[in-house]
Amino acid sequence: MNVEESDSFGDRTLDVDAGDWVSLLASCRADGYEFFDWLTGVDDPPDGFSIVAHLYNPVERARLLVRTWVPRSAPRLASAVGVYRGANWHERETFEMFGVIFEDHPYLVPLLLPDGFEGHPLRKDFILAARVAKPWPGAKEPGEAAPARRKVLPPGVPADWDPPTSTTQPASGGSPTAASEDSSTPSGTGEPPASSSSPGEPSDG
Image (cartoon, rainbow, N blue to C red; front, side, top):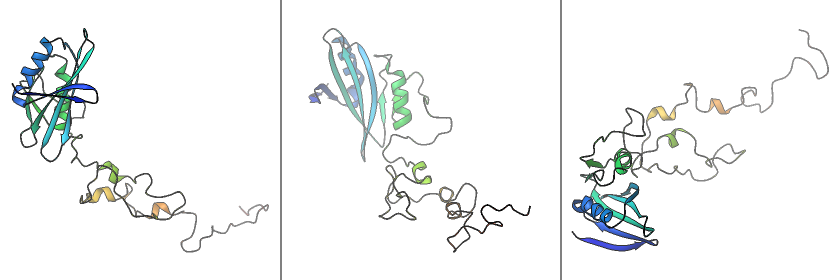
């Protein structure tokens, strides 16, 4: 088993090939790293994903990061549930958010997202369509009729993305600009409509 050891922000880190992932975790547990803290994925476009597990040795009070890598074309990795039962939900979340398949997992089904949800939200190529459908804060300064600077797409939206037509239409089906105009001001006058009575005088009604 080929293991590379390094330091990552003060934590001891072990990198291993995907084929030796479970064997390394079992070896770490035998060495005293009995507490499983968390496991997650890191999108590393365009090639693949890093899988990271954080372990803790309660006797020596030592922390350990264990990492491996899987290709985007075949994101599959052996499940660690047989070594650390606590990896169960973490692997389900990583499967759901990144699309990494953990082989031999006892119950690899979605954990957080609603039924029928499509895509993997923590992948960097996932389109955050809700940010396009709603005006992004800062696109218009208070009191401005139109943006005074170059329009910038919100974070999470690629520059070449073509939004669906439905996201550009108002919910009521009316004109996009009609909602921004004051309905009490006649078009083109800039003044409020004349009242049927002068201030201080009762109306005829």
